[in-house]
Length: 233
Image 1 (cartoon, rainbow, N blue to C red):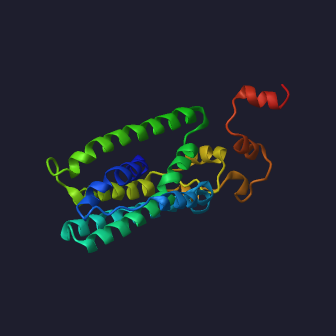
Image 2: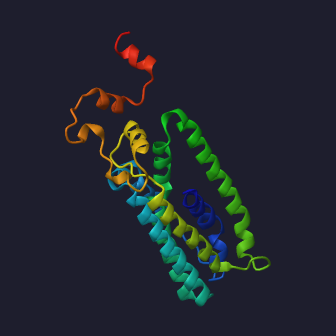
């Protein structure tokens, strides 16, 4: 899950110009990335749920492989450079409107309240760690004196995007339309693959709205002392 959060800002904003240099030093702006980031904010995550991550991963891996194939087969031509730029813009669109912002939303939702701060902190630390690793190894991977992969490096990134499709499908729970307390309850009662079928207790057939179970679900899991305080004990 962390790969796509790392790769775009590091590889595309830092070292993609090394690949562009092979096509005549063509440069372009990244304004589309900032504009499209608005599309993937929390509202869209709530509307489209986990499909936002799956669709984004598929879009990014297609762009990665197209860049790798075109850059390898027709290296150095102006036409190949044009295709490279076009699909890089598509990549930035998919990243900035899906994984870029949505990954942070997922991280803020899936950790239980007692460990949420630690979970978010570890996720952020992981992001910085892999930023450093990818930023360190990418120049060696594309440099002619070392890896000399040039555009072939996108086969590597495309493979990791493929792994993101699998992980988003099998490992990321569906949190669309749920409160943080309901997410905690859902994770206790289901698995990531079956989470999309989970229904909050107050919406289930035969469940009375406003019951003690519904109140507990809305307010989160409370210990005996907290429950006693609410009753005035």
